[in-house]
Length: 421
Ligand code: LLP
Image (cartoon, rainbow, N blue to C red; front, side, top):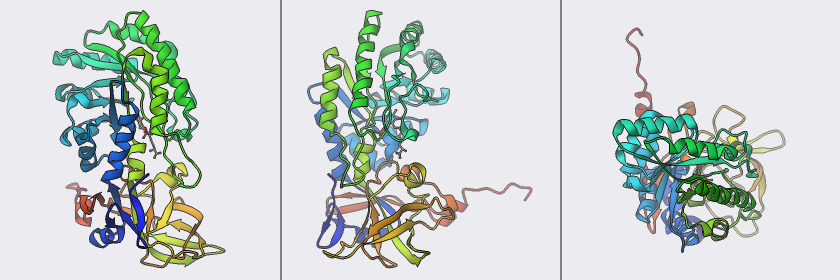
């Protein structure tokens, strides 16, 4: 459920008409709903009620300071994957002991920054990385809390580009080598091994892959404990999918996911961490765009929007489906017609949808891409020197621009011309 509903014939974000935001900030833009962000965070928090747990929002999904602060104030921790994200989380007010650091390529500088600023744990992805964390910790005279990310060789049954838990993927260490790697970690004085980490992929629409992975983690916990390691925290990653089409797909609910966690791992008495990103932010955001032209092509009509692949890359990158709706609610019974919905960027890949049924639209009309809150603004670029589009946060009947659209001067002045020119 989200808080983007039609009211009196027009699409609203909570209590604010989308058209009012468009008039104030121009198009295209992203808009997020505070109530939806909080609701989704709360669903996870409630799903793990009764177990010692922390929901660490995977901020790669949407990392605007205002979004982070909204979630942090509700009690969320953060999952970060770069020095930049770590700093963003800190600046948004997240204490270091609620930040977990994931990612396959943490550099010594990033590790140093996190150890200096405070960190809940590093999710270690390889033995070379383990050595570097140990060395930096010793240099700083501290002990680094770590889990090791294991790759359980489970098929997440999702898009190949976002599946991470198969043995051929670059993530984690093979679960079959865990015993050896934990033994190695235990010899390093700069490290304190506290648990196990796993993350098998994103946009999972079934519980079965989670069940397979978590069952392996449960077995590994018992084995490592028997080998003398004090395993007391399990980081189970993110990945629970969201409905992109309101009609047909209905991924499992957080409460069902929580029940699965309790069933597979509850008996171990470990503290549980989860790292959801998409489910918290995805349906809490829209991208709003305006029709520039309607062009009649050979056997098809193109709806040319002012938003493009640089603003929302998911359709071009993953053939992702996003529901696209007219901001002005179509009159009941109005006949729909198929459009190819495209942006102005000079690539055929700049296509959001083909032969998508929409009510008849005209230049100047607004459309909204649903489920665009996660992996939308954060993956945007300035390709074709199109400025990053603004982000807006709605809270009840208020809205605020939480990231301005940069001016062309700001963009161009980021370049410098060497003295020989
Ligand atoms: N934890 C780790 C270690 C991750 O790598 C990810 C996502 C998450 C948590 C959060 O997963 P989520 O709950 O959001 O599924 N850009 C792609 C998605 C990439 C996901 C990368 N890792 C897309 O637009 O579909």
